[in-house]
Image 1 (cartoon, rainbow, N blue to C red):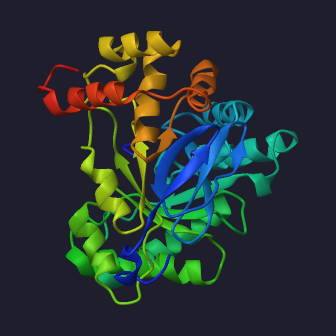
Image 2: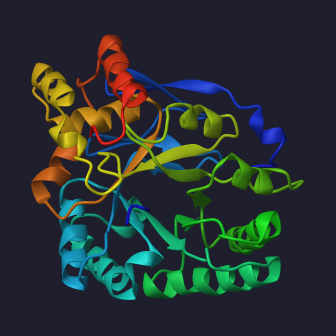
Length: 323
């Protein structure tokens, strides 16, 4: 599935600060010193809220797999839980149960919890507003929370243009103003979609835009284009593997060789490349070993400038069907 604030125009005048993270320097949009939880750093979003760089997201799994994978993710050190409406109420409720069961591992106040709303089928401003508002309210109920750390739109509407998008966003802005959610965000929004929000005087700038992004997918300019507006790019499907049939980056020979030089896996190299491109990550896995490995990409591990260039070249030179 991982198919998946401030006034708008004024907000673009943001500076890039250098974050000191466990002995390394990573430039990230707008912030101060990140907090470190289980060696996973957090970034400061455009409204001052801190968000852990690594997020765990459930997939189209059975409720029991969703519950077990969420507990495993918490045990592996994930403190950012992404729960999408698209995985279904059964899975989302199971995730909520997992967080309650794992209270001995981490308390709710130390978690960053995101709920999402899928109203891509709406087509008018009023329809999109009503559907988004209703489904957003359901996220609080399904996840068993009075407050969430983030509410995210899964997709822009398939029709209806800017008016439909503005209807969606108005619904989230109203909830944000009640302080029941600490940040609001979008997913799968391209430049034209974002302009529908940013072009409205006084609009709340999305804190995050979750996009398909990896060594081979999405294009490196995506991070910079979003950062110009103070929006953090959160990468989904970070190990590639799209379209269906293309191999995961975890098996790519170049990444495997670079990983060998650092005593890391190819998957860890792919994730580290994303972090050094100043993006955050949302990862989906029900494999405990993979979850643990995913969080082991910080500390002393850093790709060299030459390695970053080599990896970026893979994406630029990719020929359809190669990966």
